[in-house]
Length: 182
Image 1 (cartoon, rainbow, N blue to C red):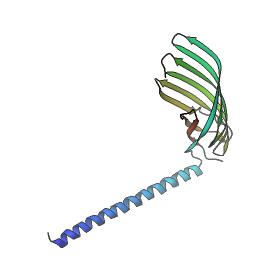
Image 2 (cartoon, helix red, strand yellow; image 1 turned 180 degrees about the vertical axis):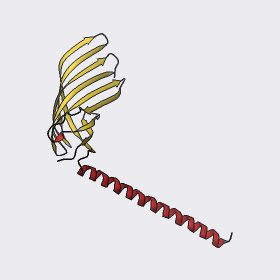
Image 3 (cartoon, rainbow, N blue to C red; image 1 turned 90 degrees about the horizontal axis):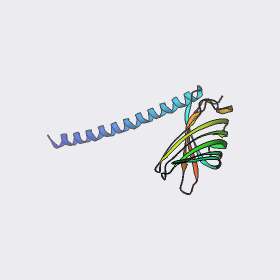
Image 4 (tube, rainbow, N blue to C red; image 1 turned 180 degrees about the horizontal axis):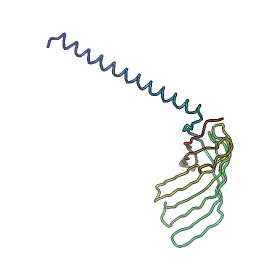
């Protein structure tokens, strides 16, 4: 192969790679634009769209009763919360806990009614909690009770995650869906 042909091949390969790269970027841009348009259209047509809310909250627990037996202690507590950030409101509920003799192992269930404003929409909804701690490893499941939304929060569904930082500060991350505002 002559030097001219080798150079032309290399330039052609580089040009083809550049064209493929530009084409990939353009296709990504088109796909992103179509996805955004689909989300906007869905929201305009009254469909639900997944959203996030986050912020800090304060919690006060007060023991209501305790049953201690060999191997475990069951405690009932009242639950009072103040949510801040994307969710501004208060919550009241009841928590039932079970502690064991093994350090770092426990479980809890709770129900709380949240009343306030979620990203500009007012109403209330109920959260159902279930959590376990296995020798320090935590698992939690906190979901909106189906059809518990009121006011502008009718149709709310979602899952909330509680984040506890060192020092005991609490915050939440709430992934939810709501029908489009009327």
